[in-house]
Length: 338
Image (cartoon, rainbow, N blue to C red; front, top):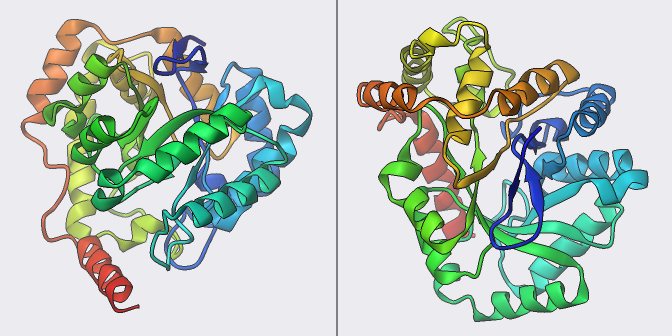
């Protein structure tokens, strides 16, 4: 396992991290990856640590805190060996976000209890809206106080889009930006986020590096998702976009037949030095052992990146009329009327 520095801090993060949304299990609605097994989750966490993964990304809303509880239980006696990143700002998936200092403080205290620790290595704002980024004086003061007290070691922002990532770099003194980035989604490059993060020495944490599992090559049009799996909310057209797009992008793996699709996809993300870590969702030990090899294999060659960039021009990441956007609009309407 190789390690990279988090922003301007002295914290060294494993190139392969552990995305812990999935191990949180189900929450209300289609907001998870479906039912999980805690025993398998704990084995996966221990396997990750034993194989060099030291970065574990979670949130108070993953399984309504269950993800944090499992991490806290598993690493209670080895807390000094792991880097725990969690998030604040979202209350749950049904209610509007709340970035008031009062709610952020309550949320953080709840996370600390569930994680069975008195500090977090990386505290991230969870999808803050534009107006929060523009009026952030109180939040920055709050974070500075937490750092002084040793409650928080580093501060980051998890954003919905690369454009928001650029705005977050400009508005916050963040050590990291968490954003979607994978073979099927190059918006972090096209938007200038990678360039901006490089100039400001802000780390990028690559979320969804396997595009919700589609880049593993194991999902197809006959795959049926659990009703509580968030992927069940996407339209058939969007699912088809990802299936066809994955086939196109994975066809670039011509000179790397000895590696898996997932390893190839993770190596693509790590080919950009601005990406400090990738955080694929992990549910079991087999996924841990497969993913960690991507770090050992190292970045892709320059000619391979050029081939990927050329192929990317022929794929479509998002379908403009997918039904998930309609669901989002309904949720936003509910928020406005609440």
